[in-house]
Length: 282
Length: 299
Image (tube, rainbow over all chains, first blue to last red; front, side, top):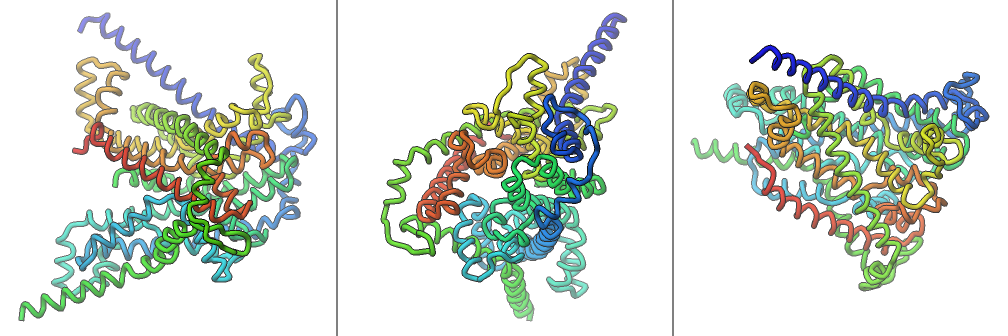
């Protein structure tokens, strides 16, 4: 390659780099700026928030928006409801899906394929299809306006079962044979040998389920109408409906609701990203 | 003797197999299998308040076909699909490709783009509703800097639907980017090196290597985005006020279903809408599976 060609190429690479960074930075600003605006609004007084023209920084930084939230809605209770139901949903799904995933992936029994397809058929059907009868079942069980109503139907996941089955299936057969010789039954193989090996699958499913449960809106909205039994999603919707023009309070509620997952993400960044990425590969 | 041992093992396998799927299937039966039958059954009844029901035959379906608001909501849903699916997938793909290169700050960008995925849809919709606010929103102010005119973004006819779409794209890009990035990272680096030696431009490498080799991930992302967009609800519910003049022009099928089921208490009619949505999703999934053979390479 001649000298000028190399120089030309270097120049090209330089220009390309600038283009790439410009796109990425612009995208980054577009992603972060709305959050920043939400945060700034949450520290403003009502008067400040609706000033025309808008001021970027609060004229006076106030935290009343946060401290008075509990007088508007039972915010702490809603928070607790969300944490509790998310925890139960995640734990329940991990347990039930890994049990069923192991059975479908590693045990031969009559009707296995049929039952597995039956389980998968649930995935084909849109959520709104189930929701009316589910509501009536919960109502007939006298569980409306209870915490149980929120998590009960969410414990049983066809997707989670599918995901865990894929993980169990990918483990080598020799593991099982060696354990058999040592006198291990299915219980021992499942608990002591295989479960520790599918940890990435459990993490992946746990993250997806947590995200789902934390975000779930329609179901909590219909089963629990009493504010003390609401989750954050329904609570925020209620707050927005009741205090329509109190923008700082609404933003404060939103800020507080997104903090836990952001903090978890900050700590378990690698697991989050890999966990989500895995779902596309398996 | 061996035969006997074999049989005991078979019986043990059966016991463990059924035992381990039993808890899941009990739940699925109560909360999923039974509801499917029940919804179809209910769609042939008029179910009013206090679950008073009368047989209606095909009345719900006939009403549905004659219901302009239902068709409008279906049309809106397809507009959302046309808007959200291509933009989400293409932006995610471009970002994934850009972030696959060796460069400074790559991990920082990856984390930033992922943030909307780990927040909360409802909170994000509220945040954008405030930004779009016609009286005090920051967007009108920013548009003003560039000499644009102010709008009531969420209550004007075509704009409101686009705003919902934009927010959905904004929210969905990061998640899909991560899945596609994992796909791209699975491509052997030797392809890229060979292309570099041949002097292929980054754009050329993208179209000749990345795109054809990640069609399985692309298919996954496309399918999941499509199915979730067909069921779009949360963003509309949180961003468009119940009394908004743009409600009819923004509500999706699921939103219309929700209002019929839980606000107008027309449960039979809502069931018929649910059946229709199910049929549409099945048809689209089947079509996708068929088309998939033409462009997805699994090897």
